[in-house]
Length: 225
Image 1: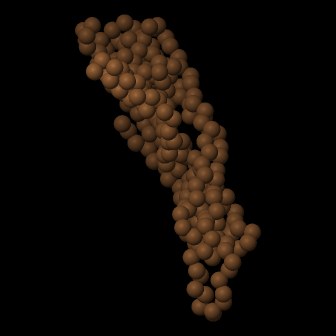
Image 2 (image 1 turned 120 degrees about the vertical axis):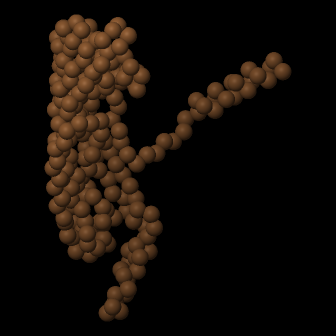
Image 3 (image 1 turned 45 degrees about the vertical axis):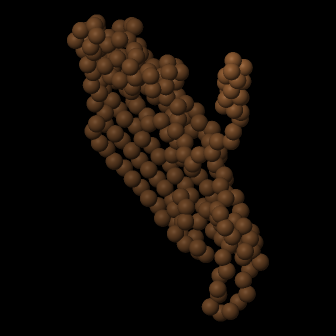
């Protein structure tokens, strides 16, 4: 019995450490700040530097120095490749013309790669029991993509696989924010943050099969939090 338990634990550990493939369809940038990045969600309870304006504004009053400035950025190098399932369907030409040679063949791959920064600028002023913060908060995400939209068909005449999809997408989202905190008692700090959301989304999508038609979508919105 004494030998079985360590053997079972070793087998379980080996299975947990075995490398496995990971696949996902989205991208979320990691937490911001040197402390928040290491401690993940646990940093919300300890926030004590300028990033407290982002994580937990009550932590502004816990800043170590009277004046602090945070300038940071993630730099995302993102590559995306996909292949539509299935094969090219018959065209069923009303004039009775035979189908092209590519009918019945698998869809080719479409790919995109790019590099973009996700910056953040924050500052705090701590006056003992009272503290203030202001800055530019940016969502942790990567909304960009840019597939080839200048070509509806491949060289052999078959339609490109990315039709009916978002071809190009560029986004700008930022939250100018101000916050304040007060220490009620050593065990209780209270804080608040006010943010104005500014967003811009530009996207191009395909709507046609044989002939390229591009629809331009523009979105701009502001809101209070």
